[in-house]
Image (spheres, rainbow, N blue to C red):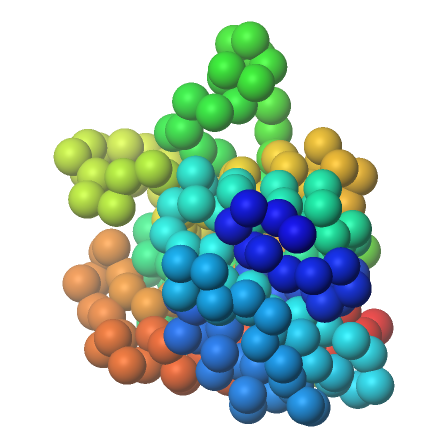
Length: 234
């Protein structure tokens, strides 16, 4: 039993979807999984296991930001033997061509976090997605006709960033969107030899100022959820 998840051995599947919002975890589990069972309510960071397409799958909330996600992902990998993780989150678009409700699939993640500089003693580690998961997701999205973009994303430690010129510079180098967790997820997956992918629905545009209302951020990401579930079955 881990410190923060506190599930019993065997309660967590080897494949886990990772929304940041625990209420989104509950919504995904109760909407898409057969016979979901809640295995964790510790700190109200909900986790569920059920089946989808005959396969056991878990959905675990991670909270906001890389430090919070790192706690839950480390425990999933180190103590529950999880081998496949797909973050299903929200992001802000950095370029005009990526619109509200579009999906962004993260090949790699730039970051302003110092965690990997400390981990690698000043070296720049490049966190990236698992190619087989990424390819499978893109094939599912293309087949479903869902609008999506594939490229680099930016994982920031500051939701209210005081450097707007940095966002513009990142966009100029082809970074598609900003979120707060992918770099840590990809790093920990690499450490434990697991597979990871980050997919985000665009909830707001840094360029145009358009945004989804809060209730839609929790419950309207159905394309992303179904595509992620179908991807882990592929």
